[in-house]
Image 1 (cartoon, rainbow, N blue to C red):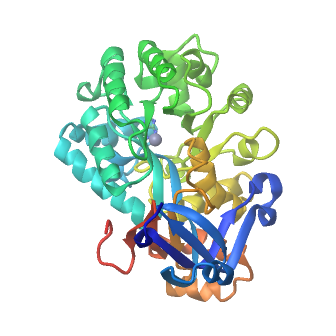
Image 2: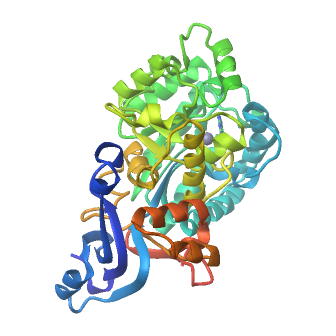
Image 3: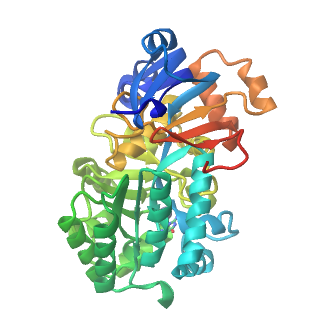
Length: 444
Ligand code: GUN
Ligand code: ZN
């Protein structure tokens, strides 16, 4: 039973998904109330509907009025590196040089638990300011970086997935584990954190080039021993990476086959990037139930390539896809900016990503990839009350442009193209308001 203090109503425009827009089309996929209300009790969404009837049935409940602002589910970031905030916008390199020159040196600092704790706090603050309420997070190879992240997320009551990067070759010595220590440390962290409050563990071999076959084997064993954990890794991001993978795994017919060989493919596996897949890999991914994290701002910034959304997500037997910032290869914490770059990438491939589909990927889609789709990612009764309030007129330009918006889709697409963190008016997680733009500090 919830007490009266954790029961309240949010009033504003509400919208939620009632179907998959890739399957049923945009209009049939959503439920939208211009004057709507969300009922929250005990950290859960109890009801969503037209404000008049919702409020009439609960005459004594406190109401927070958000006017014509839009209330929706919090964004879910399907792939992000919390230790890489400090390399956002690192100039001039493509993937492998970018890792060596910027990323690995930054990750070395996370041997210091205090440094990691500060970085985790900064990262989560930025997530909440941008309306990201859940994420699948890469830590570093230091177990203390995982403790720091989960401790910070637990304190805020967030639903988060994260894991220790496993990496036993082709990186600086200070960052390397071994097949055995990577397994042992990951197992200890799983026992400490997986299923604790709202936290999930993701077994995290960085990618095939930085793991020996023995380490991938150990990661597969770990997943079989803890099948409710997730797996996250990178795959087929850049053509140079693909060449390197072929040298390191000369017997493998393609990239996915490496992960298949070690039992790292299936429902709950989350492959970042997936730009240069061949037709066998696409068919095998479709059959496997694995998910893909689409990382648009990272792919353009690092110069990796153009994701094939149409081929991977449209039609029968689509692959589950989540939207991801991939900070710090990615350049923006904003899901609006991330969806904008995704739209632009799709345009360059001759496909127009409808806003219904972009928002779906950034909420329900990501939640499904993280096996959390029954708990978060949508504004519906029975889901946890992870919600954001979007100010649809957050800048003078957006306000002016909104004067010419004819329907919900145009309003949402204008946000994709023009909005940033200023559009996030409030962020709730588990029914608690953790960010309010009008308050001076996040993490209230
Ligand atoms: N591939 C392996 N590690 C990384 C990483 O940290 N970022 C990106 N974008 N790609 C990777
Ligand atoms: Zn990544």
